[in-house]
Length: 190
Length: 190
Image (cartoon, rainbow over the protein chains, first blue to last red):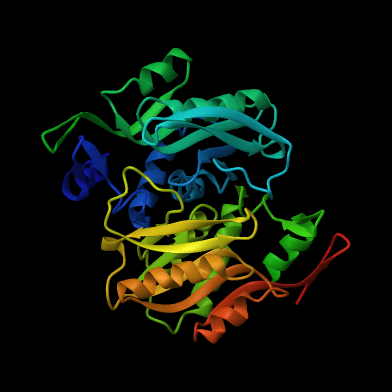
C-alpha cells in the first residue's frame, strides 16, 4: 500500500534500539482519513471472504478495526481486553500473551457472548512482530468455535517470525506494509 | 439522542450493584453504524465551535473518537495512554487519575508533540460518572497550553457529580444520554 509506505518513510521515526515509531499517525495520534484508506485496502484484500465480525485488541487496534468495519457493511467489532475489569462478566474466553515490548505476560479476554460458534472472524491489528498478541486472539476465536478468516495487519516486521508462526497454523496473513529491516536509524521496506 | 436511549433500554443490562453494562454495542463489542450516529450528533452539538483535534482515553473512547472525527473533517484523534509503554517517548504530559471502578490511581499520558499551545481540543469519552478521567484529560490539555472546547460524552451518570465538577471548571459538557437512576435492575433515563 503506497500511501502507507510513504507515511512510514516520511512520518515514521526510528528510535534507538531500532524501534520504529509511527505514533504520529497510527497508534497514539491517529490520521483518520488515512485509516479509511487502510480499511478500504483490508476490504480489497479480503473481498472474496464472508466476514461476520472483526476482532482486535486494545488499544491501538481499536480505531483501525472500527474504521475498517465501515467497508465490511458495518459488521460488529469486538476488542479483546488486556486488563481485568470489575465490569467485565466472569463468562470470558481467556488466553495468555507474552509482550516483548513490556517484558511480561498478560491475559487477553473476550466476553463469551461476543464470539459464537461458526462465526467468521477477521482479526485486525496495527503491528505483527513475533505474533504473540495475534496468537492470543486466534486462541480466543478457536475456544469459541468460531473460525478465523484471516489476519489483517497494518505494519509487519518482516524480520521477525510472526508471519511464519501464523502461516504454520494455516492462517492467512495480509500486511499492508512489510519492514525488511531497521538499520542505523533507517527503515527498509519490502 | 433517541437511538441511544432506545439502545440503552433494549440492549443495556443492569448488573448487581446497579452497574449498567452496554458492552454489546459501546465498549467491548461496538456497533459501528450506531457510532456513526453518535459522531454526527457530537458534530451537531459542537457545530458552532472550531475544533482542531479530538482527545480521548484508551480503550473504550478510541472507536467513538475515531468515528466522530469523520464528521469534523477528519481532524486528528489523540488517545491518552494509561499504561507506561517502553515505546512512548519520555517527553509526555502526565496526570494522575483515580479509578473508582478499579479502586486505584493510574497515570494518563500524552506525548508532548501531540498537544500544542493554542489548539482547540474536543474531549470525547464513553462515560461520565465522577469525572476523574475527564479531569485528567483536561489537565493534560491545560499543561500543553491548548484549550478545551468542550467535553462530549455518550452516557452520563446524572446521579454522580461529574457534570458539576466539570461545569464548575467552566467546561461545556454535552451528553447524548443521561441516566437519572439505576434501581432494582432498571434504568431510568432523563
